Image 1 (cartoon, rainbow, N blue to C red):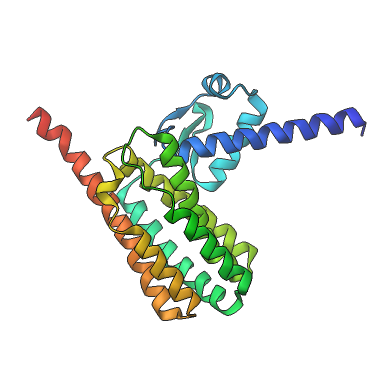
Image 2: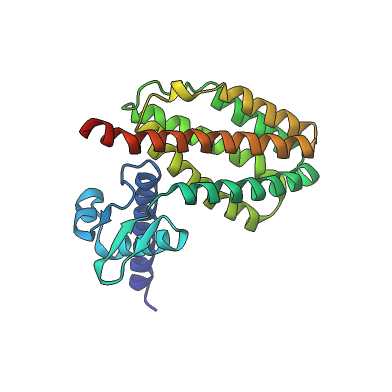
Length: 242
């Protein structure tokens, strides 16, 4: 293999990674809506990337469940449904409870310090009060994700963390599709910082039963808010046309 071919391969991988990051960000932020067609030509214009890196990124996202490959028709953003939201919530509660139990057993002082720092950053990040302020929304979501990742980081299992990251991404997509594109998030805040503080404190106290209960409450409450907004949105068109 020549040096030139090595350079080309490395360049293509870098472009594919960039395509993957950009597509994932837009899907999770609902800038690419559920069921939206992902036409390669349009994506080339959107991201300034070639066909090969975009196709590779789409195939990788399809393996993660964020994109659907439709044979000759190409690709589309994965659909959303209340049934999947409920299934996703149940799966995340079970997995996250198990991972956090491991973290309680394996976590050290560095893990504890990571949680404290992540919560401090999140608590200093205001919940956006304007659904159009995408920069504020993106920052809050980034730090919210980082906080939840800090909680599970002490478990010591690469595979468990990988599965948790995938479930967390899907949860984020549901939350952002229904909350930040529907109504001001402050109406739904319900003292979220206090919930995070209580969860972290239970982990610091190594109280596994308390952690499991708080995780269940936290995730189920968010899912109920999303489901309620979903139902409101489904009834609005009928009310306007009736």
